[in-house]
Structures are given as structure tokens and as C-alpha cells.
Length: 252
View 1 (tube, rainbow, N blue to C red):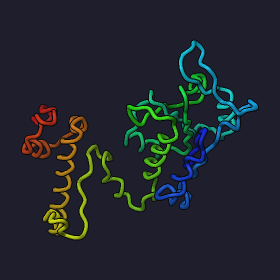
View 2: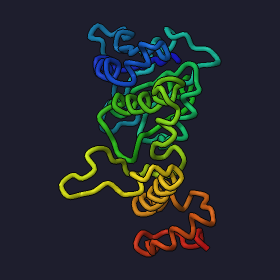
View 3: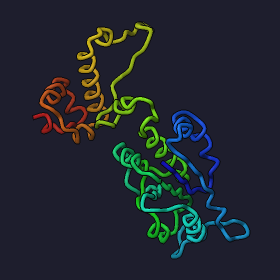
View 4: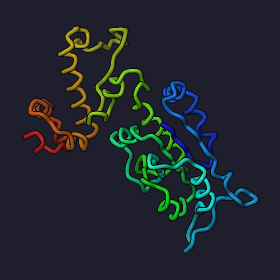
């Protein structure tokens, strides 16, 4: 996968590129990441890339000319997918991360100020994405979130497929609790089932914990999850539906 990032602050990406899973994916040649400072494409003697919005209003808007030239410098082709990170985009989730991990060439446009000229979006952008219902100073941090979540889904990026298949959100549930040595810490013991060596019972406990945690913390996810009869019975036994506003019709 090739990832081009159009940004005013390419140095912000040095950390994510040089650390952890992303660094190892680059070293394995699973991905190439190329932060591009689109300020360099400005013809203004002061390298200015923004201007006042037509129609008035507060803030500034990124001009179309430098972005157009930046896009023209890229090797755009039918396999390229251009993303603009913006608070008005569709909210990013694990399903979208999985979809993007199957692309060959991602281009991520990081906005600033009041955003970018709409004509650039109309001409080049395939999809507008938000990482949540809040506003950040610019698109660099959202771009890093997308990059990290996508790269870890690339084949061989984590080493084992199971490493991400058991993550929260991958299968529609939040992840179960984890424990390691020592067996007793601060008078708190590891659940006995995890010490039993019975893999079937361990798997059952972990799945039930995922159901419980998801129901308590994200009832919206439980309401969208296709529950089996056994799962419905387990959730009803917890008697948490009223407290957490679970859709009880899912458990009938």
C-alpha cells in the first residue's frame, strides 16, 4: 500500500512513521508513507495557502490552486482513493478501516482553518471522513488515527491474524479483560477459569465478558449485534437492560 498525505505540517508524521507497528510495516515493505507539504505548491511569495471566504464569515479557507498542483504531482490512478478528513465527514469505524486496508493507494488530505475550497473536494475527493463528533485544530491527528488503524490490518503487519480479530469492534463487540502474571496482585486474583487450561471454557468466559462489557458501555453496539439465543439468555441473566437502556426486544 502507498499512502500520500497532503498536509501543512509533514513533520507531525515523523513520530508515527518511526515507531511501533507502523515503523515495522514500513520496514517489511508492506506500506510506504509520504507526507507532502502542499505549501510548497503555493505561488505566493510568502507561501500563503489560505484566503478569506466568499460571502464573508470568520476564519480562512485553503485556496484551490496549491492543492490542485499538489494533487497533479501525485500518481493518481483508478486504484487511488482520496480521503478528506473533516468533522463533517462520515464517522470512521472498524468496518471502514477494514475496507481501506484493502486499497492499494490512499491519499489523505488534511484540512485547516475553516476547511478547503469546495471545488477541490468536488474534483478530487472520493470520501470525507471524521474520527468523531468533535473538532480538532487540523486534519493531521485524524489522518494518523486512520493510518494506524488501517496499517495494523494489513497482512503480516501484526504477525498473527488473531492479534486484530480479537480487538474491540472487529466482530461487533468490545474486547474481554486480559490478565497476566502474577496470579495474585494487591489481593486481586486472576479469574479461575483462565487458569483451568480448558480452552472451551476460556473461550466461553471471554465471549460472555465481551457481551457484558459491550452491553454496559455501548448498548448501541449490542442493539446492532445479531444475538444468538444463548447470548440473549446470558444478557437477560445479567438484568442490566433497564440500567443501560438495552433494546429488550433483542432478547425476546
